[in-house]
Amino acid sequence: MARELPALDLLPGFEAAARHLSITRAAGELHLTQSALSRQIQALEEQVGVALFERHHRRIALTEHGRALYRVAAEVLRRVREAVADARGGAAGEAVAVTTTLSFASLWLVPRLASFRAAHPAVDVRISANNALIDLARERVDVAIRLTTRARAGKGAVRLFGDRVFPVCSPRVLATPLARPADLARHVLLHYEDPDGSAPWLSWRAWLELAGAEAVKGTGALRFSHYDQLIQAAIDGQGVALGRSPLVDKHLREGRLVAPLGRRFATKDDAERAYFVVVGPHAEARPAVGAFVAWLRHEARASVRGKAAGAAA
Image (cartoon, rainbow, N blue to C red):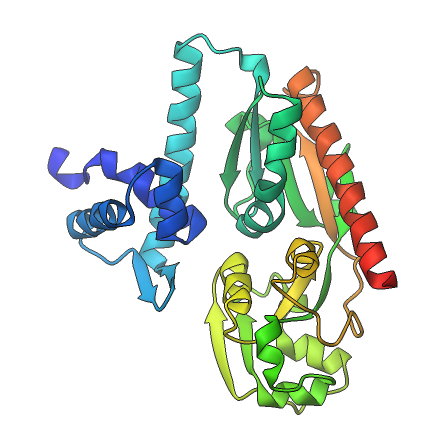
């Protein structure tokens, strides 16, 4: 058995790098140097016998084997942390386990968590970011945040906000004009890979059809399996992406991204899908969970108000 498993002390570094899709951010989280973390990942790849990451200029991406290992490693580490906290006698009522998608965690939830921690320093928030739907009661996860329909969200689900899609890019990309949909022919288009067809509204084909510009083709294409990775590429000036409001609104407000065509031709955000928060039946009466859900709703309202103000401006 020992020969079948890699060194388990290499998994936390791999999990952090896979979650951030950044050696720099993962190393900072783990208080390691970038070179030390890179050596850990290389050692893990050698022990597993396959590449776990694709290395590109200024970014990394998970391989198919890497994605499979990340899903397992993230869940195993989450359970170990919970077991250790219980063994140490930590207050179970002061921990909130949250599951949500990789893109929502990276682009919306994590950047805002500092305000929750400031208001509730005794509450330990544990985020499991993956795209798998889980049974909250069976997995003992307290809160789920998912993009879905009202009918599929389930009884007791609370709507946070809708999801609108429109082109975004780095301001420096606009050195090449982009004032109308036809101008996209002069730009590299960043595509979100959706092999199972679960998010058709995130395809350039759908958006260009809505904009009446079906015949437009970009000068090139880059494709990404993770949406937050696609947005980082847009911030880095690698092309034009389909931004999702409110996930990209913070980047728009802070000037890392712009919406060169405004929010014209944006897909509808309320008719079919929205982000909902669901609480597991075992966690409904816990004060820490109630405080976290109340904070989510407050942040969602603030996000929607900010979007409305930006649209009015």
